Length: 282
Ligand SMILES: NC(=O)c1ccc[n+]([C@@H]2O[C@H](COP(=O)([O-])OP(=O)(O)OC[C@H]3O[C@@H](n4cnc5c(N)ncnc54)[C@H](OP(=O)(O)O)[C@@H]3O)[C@@H](O)[C@H]2O)c1
Image (cartoon, rainbow, N blue to C red; front, side, top):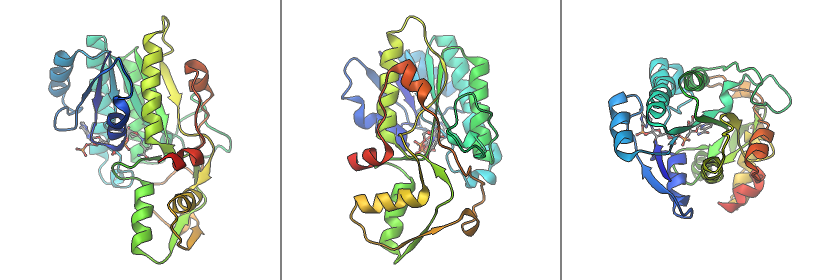
């Protein structure tokens, strides 16, 4: 089984590289943005023609949520045109596309977990560009999985956990938003899920293609997530809960973005760790 991974230097890409060797039966081709640029059809075609992957995991994205407000064209190019290019070229070559999307496609007005069929209404440029990416894949491909995930953290790249650890080393106390509720996702768990999904999909006669939600189980606020990170790392620092209004950012974020994972658990027979338990495994 040949699997191509785009965006291999990002935190999901590095997480996949970290665990890939534990899964026999796969031939992995990891490409960073210099080796495969998803905004260039020539770049994608050159790699796919050479590698002939059965699956392509698209871990490439523009992920700077606040910066995207000032760079909508760039966000759209990478998060919408990139997936469109991949969907078209994967379709031509019989490659199944496994694409990653986000909880930020929702506006956060629900108070119960979002299912895959709940209406989308992104609040910012990043969410809108990711939603456009989902839509173009649906328009240009039949063999695709779109996995929406949330609050991704890992030992690799930039993420909330690493920001909290850095700030704790620099400051005497911290204030963290307590009125945005979501679910952290350990990128190593997400990477394992993607590999399991590919293993199971490849053995299926009828493929349950479509959109899926995946994060760890449970829910928390950013404040609760920060407290758990400090507890796990035995860091003692006063942490003040604050409201979103007290911490204005260029991009608006959903107040509630917990996702219902019944569909992925049912179709792929997987178990998911609670976010607190998974944090302890890092
Ligand atoms: N991080 C989160 O909290 C979060 C939450 C929900 C969903 N997601 C989704 O999860 C996926 C993985 O996110 P992540 O956290 O691993 O992101 P990340 O660490 O920012 O990595 C993204 C990677 O994409 C690469 N990239 C950017 N433009 C590219 C292009 N034109 N062609 C090829 N590669 C390109 C970047 O490379 P360069 O640095 O060289 O540009 C970077 O290595 C993304 O689809 C993201 O939208 C993330």
